[in-house]
Length: 176
Image (cartoon, rainbow, N blue to C red; front, side, top):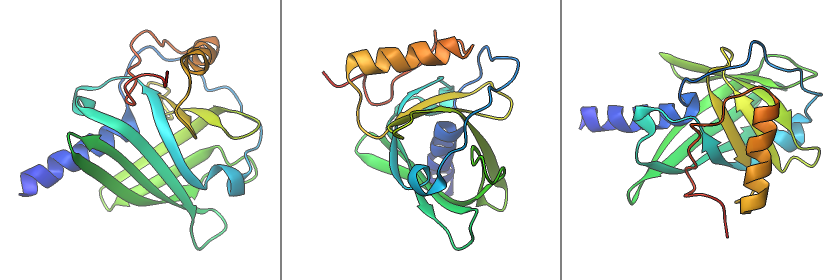
């Protein structure tokens, strides 16, 4: 039972961490993010770098809600493995108030993960995120993208200097 719970937690952690593969030298600066618009509701993880631990993990989501403090964000990461949902929750803190593009999330006493938003749509319909070491890459949208929209987002990540050749699409590709 404990091993199964650990493996489920590890699968969700993989959603968070993504896979390592050719990164840019430094993260581009992002314009200030409105936390009331960005850190609210569900985001769909439509592309990520693969990692063995994410095998079989599809339909990934990250949901945000405002916490008690001005820089506190509640986070819920989830995916499906077969018919079962695997989820991990944590409390996050915005690390760069005013810009609001860096979030550190504590999922439990032993697990903290930092996220960096490197690009975001003006209407908050999509964003591109990475880890502080820039070796993980994630593309999120509010709704499943069309094939053309997904292709444009992958091209945007390429333009930022990320290797997108190994991206996987955990929502089974774009909506037709």
